Image (cartoon, rainbow, N blue to C red; front, top):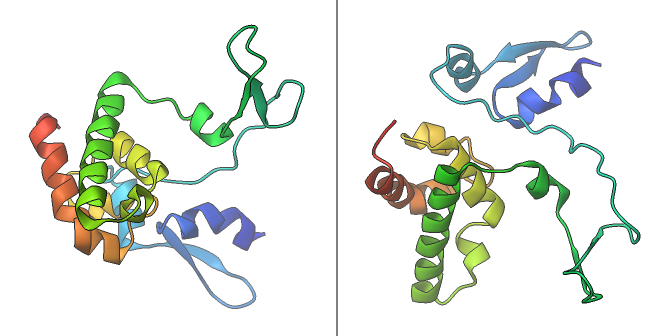
Amino acid sequence: MAGAAAAPLRYGGLGRLRGGDRPVVVLTPSGREVMAGRLPARLELPPAKLELPAARGLVAGAAGTGSARRTRPREAAEAMDRAAEARFDRLRAWRQALARRDGVPAYVIAQDRTLREIARLRPRTPEQLALAYGMGPAKLARHGEQILALLSESDPSP
């Protein structure tokens, strides 16, 4: 049970299991920072069950058009405020420019999910940026300074 209950902490990098047949959850340094209120918490919870109309996973298009599109339940459930939307738009523009320059698809630079999470977290340090989904050591080293500079230029208030 401890393994299943601790999974969000472990995958969020906030805790780890210690012990053999009777494991105990122990906070990591990042977990202690979150508990002290110095870092935002990022835990992945299962998405809420959504009621979808007619065809599973499809939402009706504009009235009378007969079109439908696939939805992403997690994105629909995670609405952003206006400031976060503005940060997300700036991050997407930065990603698009970088992708064009390097001749790669935009998702190679960062997925939309990563940019949305960065926009919500408003990281000010590399440690905070590392909490965002998809920001592993390689992407942090490659793009971290640019992302933090972009966020501090466009959103100087803490």
